[in-house]
Amino acid sequence: MSGANASFLTGFVLLGFSDHPRLEAALFVFVLFFYLLTLLGNLAILAVSHLDPRLHTPMYFFLGNLSLLDLCFASSLAPQTLVNLRGPAKTISYGGCVVQLYVSLALGSTECVLLAVMALDRYVAVCRPLRYVVIMSPRLCQWLASASWLSGLANSLVHATLTLRLPLCGQRRLDHFICEVPALLKLACVDTTVNEAVLFVVSVLFLVIPPALILISYGLITRAVLRVRSAEARHKAFSTCSSHLTVVVIFYGTVIYMYLQPSDSSAQDQGKFVSLFYTTVTPTLNPLIYTLRNKDVKGALRRRLSGSPCVLRTRRAR
Image (cartoon, rainbow, N blue to C red; front, side, top):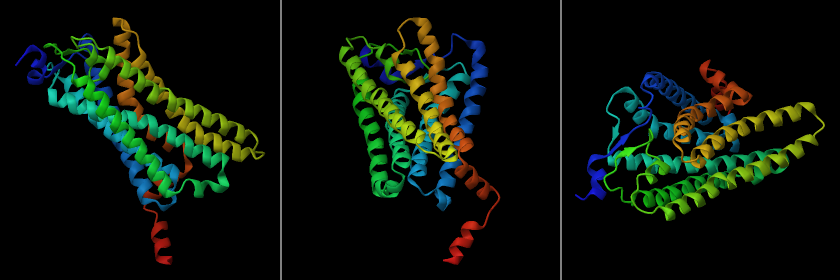
């Protein structure tokens, strides 16, 4: 086997936070804590949005998709991160790296599009309330969700494949705690101009256009809400939309910093901690923000936890 393909046999060494050995034990507890919260929070939202008929609306349909995304995204990265933080062997097989790259890239790209779709849903709900049910029909919601998932999958197939085709000339030391595109590009022993151009185009498509559309949507929402005379209606609209906007700022802010950071070593070191926040904390914040700020979800959770028979009564009445 030639030096260019040595990584296929030996896998990669994930340097991760090895230059901060004293922090690794604390980071292990940090990642484990937030991963367990991610599992609990997102599984709870998936369960309650499926079981409670009052939550069978477009908003909670997209929220369920977001929870499924975060659940799968965290599960594709957190277990390997925990293994590397716990012991001295900080390695990942080549196959494991390939799977992690394809899956995490597909899910991350999907979330970029899905958040823009959710902004569209909020725009229609606030600015076209009388036609909301007609416009956001089940068929359109399914189409928008499918388009989000397929766009993420397409980006992953193209971008990850181009990255993995680069010869590494035996280099195995990956300066990250996950298999991530910018870190892999730095290992290549050939010109990566084409890959960097693809990365720039992808960044524009998934990290610039969706946030721009979201900002436009919320600008229109703000203008429409300010015209409402009822203070209670304005408060409800702002409360609902602020939850989504909080998720958007946290998600895009960390991802943009991660992909647009400069190449000096200190910035790379900071980028690892930002990546840790993006891959570990953000999937936890999504269900917490929506649950704590949304009366419908809190009410549904209380009914489920208390074993409220309201749904059974409704079915019997029918």
